[in-house]
Length: 480
Image 1 (cartoon, rainbow, N blue to C red):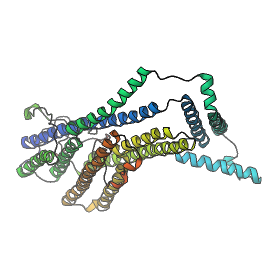
Image 2 (cartoon, helix red, strand yellow):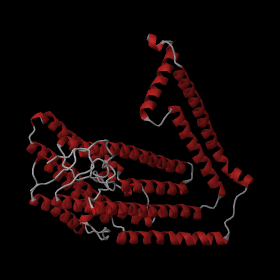
Image 3 (spheres, one colour):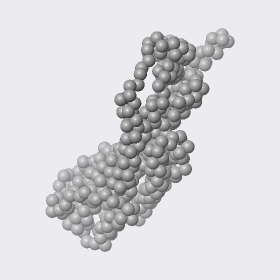
């Protein structure tokens, strides 16, 4: 059969396809759009309700501590210790100069070299181009000196706050404490009774209506369809399609629907009516360029530009983002963990329960977002795809249509394997998270409740095939 009839040339807006080919792809894109929207909506709701559970559990711990600590001098001492620690941290960051580790290391090295030259009297050899200092260099040097001085001042202020924290009792007596009235205590007790009930209710609601299997199932179904569409579009460029090929695409759409049942998806699918007479269904990926209607046959270079390169760029962006966020959250975990030890050392152990709850909340959120697992899996998949692309480029001058189709199948299979591993890892990781959330609702805390490093797949982040950025490209259709 004729797979496509192109009435306009490359880059024109007037393009017609064989009716069967157009209908098969339009229905596939229609299902993909429905699954994609449903997955995004359910994922946002899933994460939001878990955030509510984390916040209510954290508030329960904070209010519980407040209900047993009535001595205002204890709060004054806590305030001075935390303020001193904050000044120490800010001062350290000013001395180091910047958040970025590379400028920090370079700035530290220069300061060490300057100190050694000052102590030994040795002069650094300068080239003629370096013999004169530019205004920008002098400005940066002045700013660096000011930052170091200001950081040392903050260090001294932090030490001063720690010293005066020993006189918290005298400060409380001079300023005056506060008295907890009976109605305030009654209200606090009522809130402490209500918060665990709210957490339990949220957990039950989440288990019934916001299951992790819902958004994961729709994501998997959408990606199965998208893989089949791209494979078919490449085949359509290099060979004539048959009715069996189009029926195969429709079979993939049916299997994607069966995937929802296999995963136990309980959320209904919200979909608009499909009308093949209403024109081409526009795919709703954010990366699809205007020049690509989602139907035109793709040669291998177009496949690189429209599918492979955007996917590789998406992997690189997500690896960078997830690695940065995992480091960021781990710094806060270490900070609050150290603060708990500091409070215990300063005889404020009752407040250490709050720091333990903060550590638990951050670790819970980190495990829920799965940043640590994601960047590892994405890096491995990125390397595999780059290796396949390099192998193809080596022999592209002698590649036959069969070689090109095999290359596309291999790439899509790598993406499919990553997706399958991702789904299994998500379900396993979320089982642990659901159990830990229920334990948090009962008041248990501690980072040892969570073992994110034991999971081997991507957790609750996006599937690796979600929404790469839009490339700037044009489409070339195959004329018949």
